[in-house]
Image 1 (tube, one colour):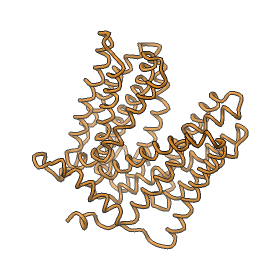
Image 2: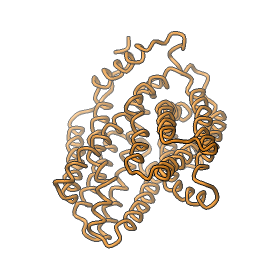
Image 3: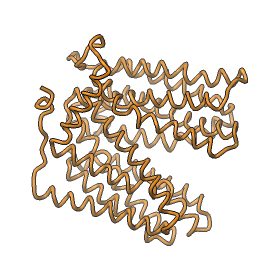
Image 4: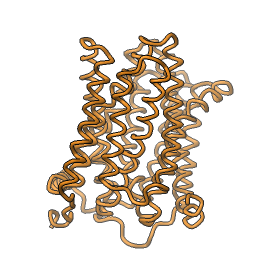
Length: 415
């Protein structure tokens, strides 16, 4: 199936290779920002500042990026952003070599790189439905997610190899090279001749951006499928983020002799599970649906709930395995539903709206459960979060069984 798609659609090859290059560079430079900041300051607070600079842009400009991505030539926008990021990231290398690099330059560059990401990500996601048929979409989504997660696992390995060859500062040089490769590969993608923009640059006004976001928000609120998708996504991510990113490590440190090593093993096991499930999904479901999305969310929640009752390493592996089955089913279904139900000229806003909600849920989850962890045992938080994820998915599955979800045409609100 995968070989057939790649063989019949050369655009998919360039799209996936470009995504791989860009994501590898992002992982490497992300590590470099953290390593270099700690090396320069020796401060956990300053290092946290870099992490904040990477999240804040998506909360500030995530929605705007989706609007712009819908209005302009997506291919040209992606190439332009990649080319802008090259001198921006190389400025860190240059200032370091001139011994002029300071902490605030790292913060500014990190912030600007991720601001550009607010425009790059929705445009990149919006191109996929344009270059694929509906029959190919599930397979290509699976390949894209596999590539992205594979790069996340491969990135730290590549960083270790690079550290043995060059100084950490040249992680940024490597990142610049990946942006160049990404731009070249995106340039090879052939888009259809049909008009894919709906505004002219000369006609833009700042107010038009917010009006567009307003209309899109009204449309989301007026129909059922996308609204349900966003609501369930917010709930699932909110209850998952802290327990997975922070709680799992803390619980392992408290219940196993070698907590950090066990954590690394579990992350590797989780990554392998997700990749395998991603590859099998298109063979099981040719078309993904809201029912599939909720089913995956239910399994995901059960996996988190099981971790709350884990006392030995084998039980942790089982819980992570179950979560690793549910997450990709839920994630790929969400992407497929957005690609299916959103109008082509609104895909950028749809994906940026989704990303904004994800980052907002992440931020609230980390803050709230971080405070609650001072009062409640980690195990209890796992049980609460896993139960809420599972019960939420189960309730919406019950609702779905009673009525048919639909979509109101976007043009009805835009005219």
